[in-house]
Image (cartoon, rainbow, N blue to C red; front, side, top):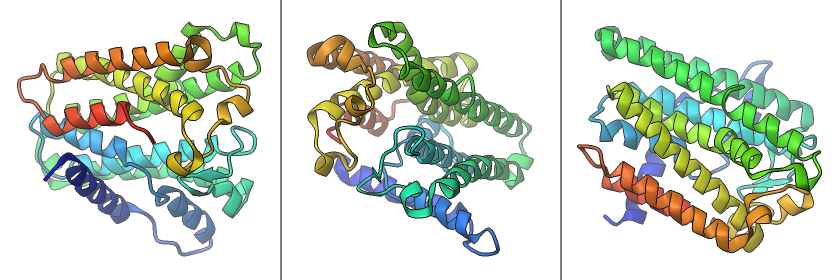
Amino acid sequence: MNFKEELQAKTEQAEETLKQYLPEEKGYQKTVLSAMNYSVLAGGKRLRPILMKETYEMFGGSGRVVEPFMVAIEMIHNYSLVHDDLPCMDNDEYRRGRKTTHVVYGEGMAVLAGDALLNYAFETAALAFELPEVQEDVSLLKAVGKAMGILAVKAGVYGMIGGQTADVEAEEFPPEKVTEDLLLFIHEHKTAALIQNAMMIGAVLAGASPEETAKIEKIAYNIGIAFQIQDDILDVTSTLEVLGKPVGSDEKNHKVTYVTLNGLKKSEEEVKRLSEEAMKELGSFGKRNLFLEKLVEDLITREK
């Protein structure tokens, strides 16, 4: 099996795992449940669940304990996209080639769907405590508790929400006040934090040491920053048909990006540097995961 076929197979596996945990669309709250599922099942690379599972397996993990966390991280990612697309934020009408949640369900219901996905993510992750393999292993029980903490912190005010806050405020700044330091803070917290979240949880659940987990956190930082800079590059160089979402939205929203600060050439060079550093560190563990290494390389240099 070549890389593309293997990636497709793993994406489909992640999709099936996700579907197993989604809520049934029934009861008086049926509309918000429908909006949640619409948002989550809108396609996408399922990058974070795959990164989590591949890191888990790299450290020798096996079993089902990783599954609730794979689903939880994808729900958190998708809730952030639902809120990102709102008229009060980026005001985007398309996501992954189809209408965004607020366009289909209305702004109020989209807010509720995002809130619901965040809550449901933690409900789902907590199901890991009920697994027999966890209840019978004290060390795994502690690992699940630690993973819950990582999930919360990296998605919260010291993670993704903190980055989003700085991003929203930066849009009101005159361009000259948006420094590279501020931009890297936004990228680290808004984008890299969820990649760190995924990979660190995978490592922790597999029994990685604190030192190994810290190393994974740094690797995921490099991946996240490179991923976001590449996203900024694509917003300038790609098309709606290729990317599946509107291009030029950064310019439309008067957003300062790494590209507008440093130009395309330097941005491309920085993506290359971060990518190479991440790949070198990722290959330095005792047990290598060649698929994971190829996935990281592929997503950083992606065209959509």
